[in-house]
Amino acid sequence: MKKLFDLFLSILIFVSCSDSGGEDPIDPPIEPPVENDRPKNLEEYNATSDGLRDYYFEDGYFDIGVAIAPQTLDKPDEIALIKRHMNSLTAENAMKWSSIEPTEGNFNWSDADKIVDFAVANDLKVRGHTLCWHQQVPDWIFEDNGVEASKELVLERLKSHIAAVVGRYKGKIYAWDVVNEAIDDGGGYRNSKWYSICGEDYIFEAFKAAREADPDAKLFYNDYNATEPQKRYSIEKLLEDLISRQLVDGIGLQGHWNLDGPYLSRIRDAFDSYAALGVELQITELDINTGSANEYTSTIESKQKSAYGRYFQEFRDYKDEITSVTFWGLTDDHSWLNQPGKPNFPLLFDKNYDPKGPYFDVIDF
Ligand code: G3I
Image 1 (cartoon, rainbow, N blue to C red):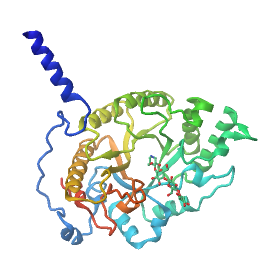
Image 2 (cartoon, rainbow, N blue to C red):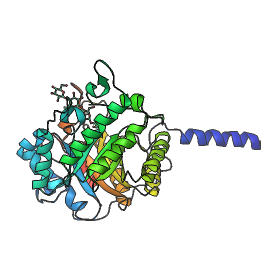
Image 3 (spheres, rainbow, N blue to C red):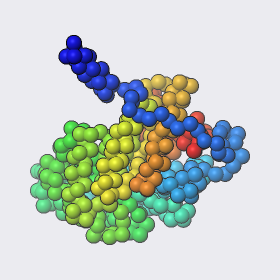
Image 4 (cartoon, rainbow, N blue to C red):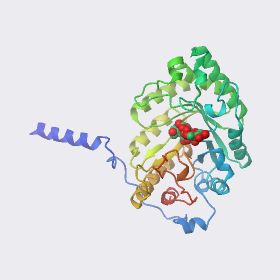
């Protein structure tokens, strides 16, 4: 009888722990909202000029940032939204290798300069994104007269690119995503051109070059799914190695999340274990994917309100470890998640620049 009971118990435990979506059984209940005088709806929002930066950055929590295209800065409504809500900017694409150095030695600074100049003029911080990634990277780096380039040549190109880019924005860009997404979801090194030609050395050389080019800039390793245990352990190992060489200051958890996950327990475990290494934590690319529905229905809105509400409650709980939270886009219609004919609604502002329901949950504390 005892055996039968044990078997039943283990099946019960297995079923309740499996990662099948839905509510996490070990997540604590969300705290009841506290009374505050912050806007609760659009009318109250329009009656004040306060924004996210007031509730978070000015109140001692963390920076609030947004990733933008340079064209955003031609639009008065978008500029107004940035100034009201943000104190930090990231270039969504303009600082990636293929944008800045599409052919060897020919640098195209105009888009990146536009964002940095705007930030400097408006007293906003800038996170640099990203110096070394497997996407948006031109083929010429890995080629040499029609054959694959040697490891020495690839590393030489990597170092001189980083010296040029970080050097140009020295003192203006306070933090860099130096290496992006070098670990795959299984926990191994991603089999990119960087890795197949250089092995893991490219990671260390990239960080070294960034450190040399601007010793005062904070250097980040940035990745998605950084809360998932298998990947997290490998990121931790990499961070430990970089820390022992004094080459890294922080971990960027991208935060391309969903209505149902990651579970708060996973997020918390990840925050705890990265923080235990002594590095800064930043949420670098936050958005909450609303899935395949073509409309922002009230059901989706209410799920997204609850998701944004609980993620930000978690960020606030870790305010001593988290130094910045950046949204990956300003308004829903500018998100990378939109596909032709398949809209997504992942951000806090709609296409009319108005705050959506989840905005009020983010500021309700
Ligand atoms: O600029 C060209 C334009 O000239 C051309 O007409 C058009 C046609 O497709 O493409 C334009 O380039 C696109 C670029 O975004 C700018 O809009 C690229 O095709 C498109 O691939 C590129 O997508 C970007 C993606 O990274 C690249 O993989 C997204 O905007 C950007 O949000 C996304 O950001 C990444 C982070 O850097 C790293 N973490 C994941 C995140 C989401 O994928």
